[in-house]
Length: 95
Image (cartoon, rainbow, N blue to C red; front, side, top):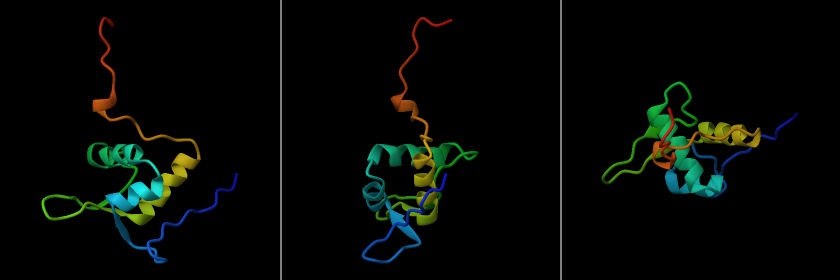
């Protein structure tokens, strides 16, 4: 199967890194982006995206554009980033 390479552009230019808002627009799903960022921070074996700079007071989180494009290709192939712990349902009564 051949998958066309998707390329992210902002104002006609492919940036090296994009902020979270731009990444959410490019993906079309903020929740999927949140899951990818959670993986990048907490699952070093399968990070989904590369964070160039963590956000904080006065700074934006920057995401490597190539890694976001690669993550989109994974989604296109049918993979899904894992749910975050806050999304998991408790399993009461299981032994």
